[in-house]
View (spheres, rainbow, N blue to C red):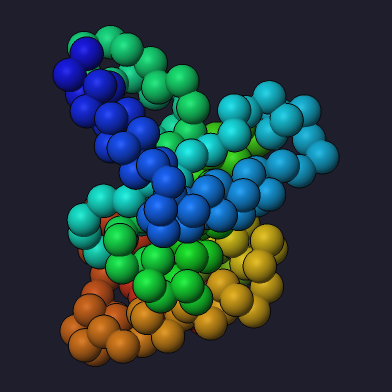
Length: 187
């Protein structure tokens, strides 16, 4: 109960009248527009709410996931860092986070890894590379969703990846679902 109360208290207190509430209301419109596609599975999802937190990256709490203690999350929540509101060009991260919810709702979270694995193998890639792309599909799919919703605006945020030191841009983690930033930029 404390976790769900704390989470939703953050969401609600940020909704007070003022600049933050108005900006978050605009972010909600962006998230809702990204979710609303002509597909029955997406029409059944509650409208997402966007809220702010500290940190570097955005994240999502999908509708229906269990909070500690057994309570289910009643709606998609998208958390973005406060800094995103001052860097409006980075708000495409909202679209990426909506893509996570859409991938689950459309059944792509289980199918996309199979497709990636098969296509990499058919293209002559090794089993190791096929396994990596299957792992990375959980982030590549939402990246693609964001690009389809915003076009070049999503591509413009790639500059954030390329500003990292080379050791980070090319680093491959065998258990991290995030592909190396260089590969994300190429995609």
